[in-house]
Length: 356
Image 1: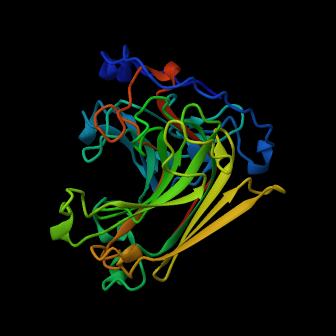
Image 2: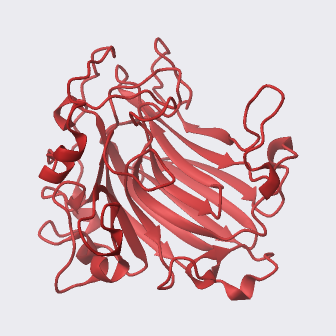
């Protein structure tokens, strides 16, 4: 696996924090997998946009833009540049083709420039069905949306086959965002009906795969709190393989997924329904499949009356590596000691299909 080094710009941004120390246990050794990557028919000499259809994606990267309308903000590459076949885009540190297997690699360190509404770094694609970010045609809705005809699609499908190769080895064990990365999302106008999360404790060989549904209150309650001071808008977590909330000293989740191990997810939005299909060891005798179904228009998810559902909301797909570990918030209490110390996340995609 290629080792990514920080660009000179990123080093300048991150200077002063590399001396942090870690109290994490000794990391578990990584298992090597002898996969036949040729089945994915990827060309190691080509850029991501030549192996994968990038015509309806833009990407945000963990680096400052130095020119144009995004000067001084997190770097974004539009869908035309991503899918350009004559001068295809890739970034040597954050978004590139793996030279050994042809996979599409996303990398995000624990500390780097972020988007305005997040403290977490990302190397992540955002679906772009139209040209302008805020126009309705850029997003999709469920079938029962009152103005469904104004949007770019009703429902859609996202399919991915990938491995998570690295998550941060620093972080606070009692925080579920520590040691974690989001590898697929559906984002609404405010909240997320879907986040697919991989999390692995440093001392464990196996990591856990889970998904979150975020309750979607009415606008007046978006930042409201209950009598205990907890936000009404919160994630409802679902275990798929392993357990999402393991702590230091927890038993090894041997039903989970190792770093470098290939698995798959599929998200299907048909009518008002969201179907999730997760596959461990796809295409082998050990293949395991788990499915989930959610009516996105219904609301009152799992008995939470504050949830209005997403029947009147617009949404879009995301995929890549959205690092949940950062040094700026108490949500994870992670450190930045550099790439060689393991304070970054990395995922490699061998299949990525957006059908809308």
